[in-house]
Length: 210
Image (cartoon, rainbow, N blue to C red; front, top):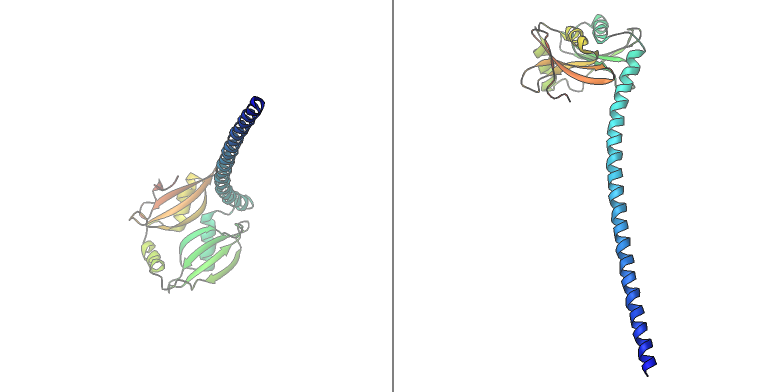
């Protein structure tokens, strides 16, 4: 009888110990799963940051590639576009299509707007297409009015900004309540943004530039 009691006691103790071990094992599994989820989330965030950095690097690489393939500057691209399509230049930038051309926006005396593409290596006009998408857009009408009679035109703004680096884009901006030329430059692989005053041609750092 005593022997049976001892066996029963040992069996109960073994079961209790086994349950405790199982509980600890389950706790370890949950902790491991939490660690895996945390690691996965951190890795996903890091990948997103890497993707954003890669996009910025790709943009800079495209600009460098286009600019290194020829010596045509933004100011020269504007001059070539105006020679082909007389009018007022509103903007110039490296075309988004692999940066294979300068694209100059020109508004003619009759108000029609054209996008003139200029080869960055030779200055040859690759084509001129009328922009009819936003002819009645208020912003499009305001831009020619803003630069009309300005002492500094797009070409002169590009020349002024060139002292800060290689100009990759020039346009009109009124985000801060004051209409001015804006210019993007590249120097030592870094993009910077500048404002160029319409009256004096003075170049200042864009307040939104990081």
